[in-house]
Image (cartoon, rainbow, N blue to C red; front, top):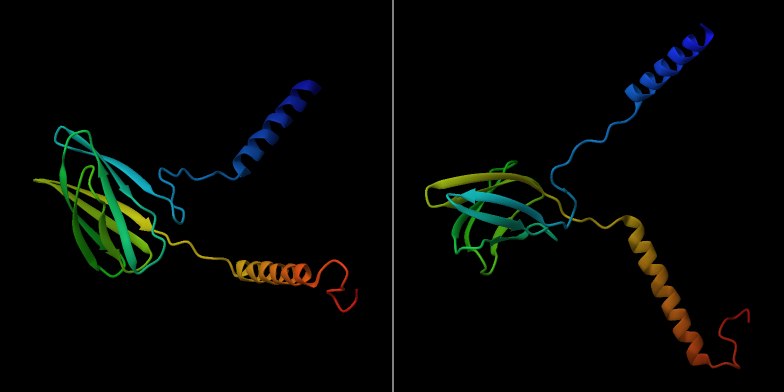
Length: 164
């Protein structure tokens, strides 16, 4: 009887811990700064992979390229979901990417037209930001580089530092 109570207590503790365990959210697409987003769409009998290149800065160009086994031409429209601004362009499979204008970071929709068929791809424009400590780190490397350059010019017999 005692072993059954101990077993039940273990099961209850395990169930309690599983309920409290933090659950990671499922992410279908990586939404990180500077990462390309690849989406495959089917238009008629043709399969097209669209590559939305990661934005390095906004306002600036957002490059969209198309990859397909057969030649296909697509009309593109980028629309911001926050202010409604739009940018249009066209791209053909295997050709130069289209450069659509992204005015700001945040949620956007890419409307893709191939003839009479339309596909809308929601995504988020995320721009990489530099951390404040990187400026301090760059300054430290600058000082270290300048001081090592000074020491090599002084020569091996002369003291470079006032304390040496």
